[in-house]
Each structure stands twice: as C-alpha cells, then as structure tokens.
Length: 573
Ligand code: FES
Image 1: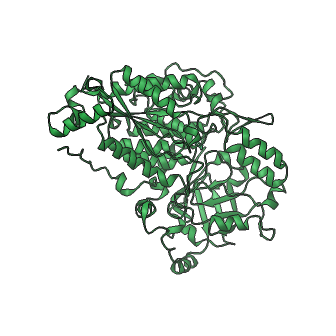
Image 2: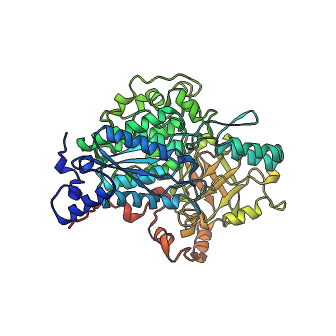
Image 3: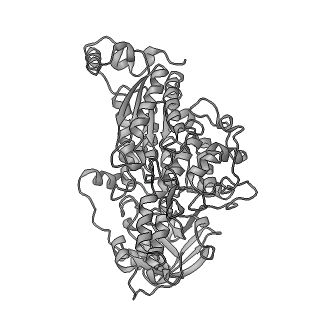
C-alpha cells in the first residue's frame, strides 16, 4: 500500500477532529451508515449515467449494485453519484454539445465530494469520453465500467445492426425496394436488449478505445450487456478500484502518448467511428498528451482493419465477443502496440493480452487477409479544409476515392431536407453534395448529419453512394463517401462557407487532398461579402458552449476545461 488511511482524500471530510467533520459524520449517521463502514476506507464514487431516457444504460441500476458489491468486498465504501445520461438517440440539438457538460459534472462531483477514487459507468456514445475527460482532469484513480453492446438485432429472418440497417432500410424504402410493413418490422427487432449499439459505432469504438488505453479491466469492453459475465465484470471493477486507491494508481500514470497510440491503433484495426478523432484528441489534451489529426493519419497508413464488423464488415459486436473480443484482436496486432503501457489492473497492456485467442477467423480476420490493408481512415487537407477533414475510404465507393464534381450546396439541414428530393434538382451521381453550418458552433455540436441523403431520383436509378462534404459528424454506424469534420467550420467563416452551387470540388484520397477549384481572387471577393450569422444563444449553457467550444481538429473541448492548470481541492473549515 502506497497510501495510508490518514492520507486518503476522504480523511479531510471524516477523519479530523473539528466541528465541520463532526457535522459530516453526523450526516453519514443520518444516511444509516456506521462510522466503521467508511472511516479510514477508500470512498469510491460510482458515477452512474443511468436514466430512464437512455435505453443503452437500462441495466445500470443493477450494475451499480454489482459494482458496490465489489467495493464492499475489497474494503472500500461505495457512494453512487448520478450524472447526466447522454442518450445518443434522444438528446438534441446534438449529444456532443453535452459531452463537455458531463465532463464538467464528473470533474466537479469528484472534486467537491469526499471521493478517493471513481468507477465511471458509461457506454452510450458521448458518455464515455465525457466521463473520462472529467475524471482525467480531476486526476483521482478511476476505472471505466463499459455498458457493453446490446444483443444482435433480428427481424423478418434477417440479422440487423443498429443504425447501419436502419440507414440502409430508409434508403431502400425511399427507393421503393421495400414496403412500409417491412420497414415497421425492422423497428421492433433492431434494438432488442439493454446495451449500446452493437455495430462498430461510436459506443463500441470508444469502449474499445478505453480498454486499449488501459482504463478498463482486460476483456471488459465487448461483453454483451445482458451476459452474466457483464455482471461479474462490474463486481470485479468495484473490487479493483479500491486497490487502485491504495496503490495511488492515477490516470497520469496510465494516459501517456503510448497509451493514446494504442487507442488509435485499436480504433483503426476495428474500423471504428470517425467520432473517435474528436473524442480521443479531447481526451489526450486533458491528459497532456500530444495526439492530433496527423498522428491518426500516420497510424492509419500502417494499420490493417481486421474486425469484420458492420458497417465496414458483416458481423456484430456479439459475434466479436464470442470470437475472442478485444483481447483477441489486440493480440493479433500485438506487433503494432506499445506493450509496456500500464493499465488499471497494474499490469501492462502486453501482459493483459498475452495468449488471448481468436476463435473465429471470419470475425477477427488474420493479418494476411484484412478487410482493408491500411488507410481505413484518412485525414484530408486543402483550400477547402486548411485545418483538416476526415473520411473513411473503406466505407466509400472506390470510384469516389479520386473524384471531381460540381457542388450542390445546402446552407442548412432544413434546406437539405426540403430540397434533396425535389424532382427539379439538377443532380447526378457525379455531383458533390455540400452541407454548410453544421459544425461545432453551426450545428451546434456537429450533429451526425454527415451521411447526407442521396436524392430519391438517384436512389431509384440504383445510385447508393455519392461524394458528400460537411463540417458535421457522422454516426459510426453510417457509411458512404462522406467527408466530415471540415475545419474551420463554415459557421465561423471557414472556406466551406464560401462554396456555391456549381463550383468544382476535387477529392484525392491517396494524396489526402480536398480542393475547391475556385480562383483565389473570387474566393477573396466571397470572403469579403460573407457576414457572420447572429449568435444562436444569448444565455444559458448554449451561450457557454458557444463562447468556449474549440474546432473539430482540436477535439471540441472547452478551451477553459482543456487547460492543464491545477485546480485546488476545496478548503474545509
Ligand atoms: Fe446508445 Fe447507440 S444509441 S450507443
């Protein structure tokens, strides 16, 4: 033990003799807790993002009890602390807008209460980075308990992936190849148990990244939420955090540049969501690490995509777990990982994955037969995106990897919705659909609109992919030739704001270029004529978000939260 009981942070609340600590102990008695239950023991905050509005976390009430069981067994004292549940499907205008809110809430919960360590319970998309960012800034020992994926979807004899098969079904309904009844049948079978999306969406991507970072117990991230192994993992997580407090195993020892390289390599081998760029950059900055878009691109050039999971592949997270899970996949790419990186169980990543087996080579592909040999993700730059943009080449039609076409510009998602199926729209499969004002400030919060719908008349002619460009994000469950996260965004006058219908745009993925073919003097004229839109918010959280949020290439954190200055523990008088 590195830490003695009187060195516990909670000792300041409970251990000293003063009128104030007397008051704290009297209120613990009011809670029905004996002094011997908590005094001199690690107090573990269980930060629980359960909410009745969040279907992906509906098992968290039970799991919190299982985490507490582990904390008690290991000699700690658990306190469950609810935090905002960011339910990806329901929260508007965009769940990303609330990631920083959850990060602030997590950090301040841990700072303002007598916590010695924390178990973070999350999984539905933005909850994972939000919890991790806040806890990293606070700096106490913490461990992440991933929600785990839901079971595979089933309807009408087909296996369904959340998100992915809804997007496909919607296109087919609009093309007239499936009927309304088929569409309604999908609705009841596409999400049929507790747990997160079971495609390689943002949830699975970020839960896996947390394991690769060393922030979960080994093998935790892919256990299906309803599996009894998930409950056992929750209890083991509760046990482990108590020892982490005594060992003083803080995130500053785990979150290194090597750990972030491991997370990025893991995401690339999984064919993970492009949301990971925004979140991992934000998380790295909180930890004082140097991750940026260029590092993503460099690692992408050498990392094979070997997880055969939708939307890039054909299986789902439940299959991935049975095939060996993340440990199996990481063992397969062992040679590309920084094996000495420390993890929450006190062992290195290399030790945690040693000997892990793959049981199904069609789900976790051999290195000599990857889904994509390298470049599953590419960072583009050019006069249209000076600070970068991203595309998943593996999810795009190969004919669009090098392409030049005429832009059709929509100034807002409302304009897009209204105009995209207009029979008079002059569009063909070579056109480039452009959406403006959908970035961090414009969306706001970069809503997942990036998979812009293909015009109905083209769908009916069999077209299923087109080049699409925007400054918003795309669901990890989406697919297509979609250039995303264009920075700087159009709402603040980035070059995307200057594009007009009829302009020619060229993409060259192998050269990592995105070019607007408009003469510089014409662009200068358009820039001079551009006027900034009025602020969306004049009060409330929206105004705080607006004043502080950074651009996509910087992780969309609040500059004031990303700062690394130490915040003192509260005085207790
Ligand atoms: Fe919760 Fe997809 S909606 S993880």
